[in-house]
Length: 328
Image 1 (cartoon, rainbow, N blue to C red):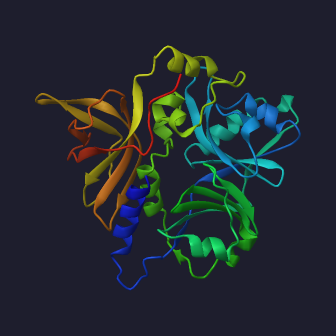
Image 2: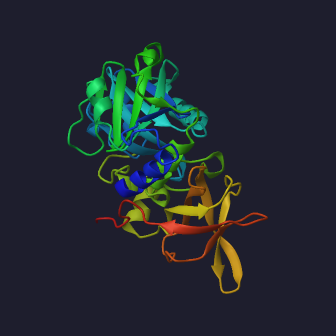
């Protein structure tokens, strides 16, 4: 993951030789924040998501899935603590259903669930973030999935070259002027895809169980916690080997953004459906497109792939930055 991200960053920066190699970029994210307050928030959430809420601390963030009773995903979320409340980051495509499902049974618990509109999520990336961390007095622990409070809000460390900042909107003008502000999140999305970070689009909601989008590989499923919606299906996928699909990173050479929703594989002289695209991005600096696709988990990595559209674009499968092999 680190080498892939750095390759993209170097490609991005090489288009402007006047910028220093240590340039740090920032962009407003379209992802949304759900806020959970109240004394029952931990126990209530414990029965709603695939993650163990007893693991939540102020110094960490955690991936999780929100499933229906059949184990199909309503949403993929990243949870963190801030000022005694829980917050969940999810995409603009997932937020409406996620919020509605979380609220469905909240009347039976002492918990308030709302869309937080007082904070802005900022994506930060660069090959050396040390100057920004020093300027904002941000210090992370050495643990994986690290997060921390700082003067403007919450900082979440995705890897050595990427952060998410959750900042109170009233404090946005206190961000360092040295940041290069981008007017879109295209580059950020490419980096997220190449890091293998799952995210659903509107067409893929209630299509996949958590293992099909690699949630177990990024520690987003607890197989030791108590009951939650969809647990039986999720457990069956693991312990009975029922899962036959996984999420892959795809790359294509192209001069335009992808328009397709599906990917095909070549079988002999014919092309057959291989899977569904979850996310796509286009990097105009390198003329490359990136995508996340759910396909058979036994697909050969050299299988010829293309988009399903009038003028197909060929894909290659990139290596995932994590292992899909599960421990029993």
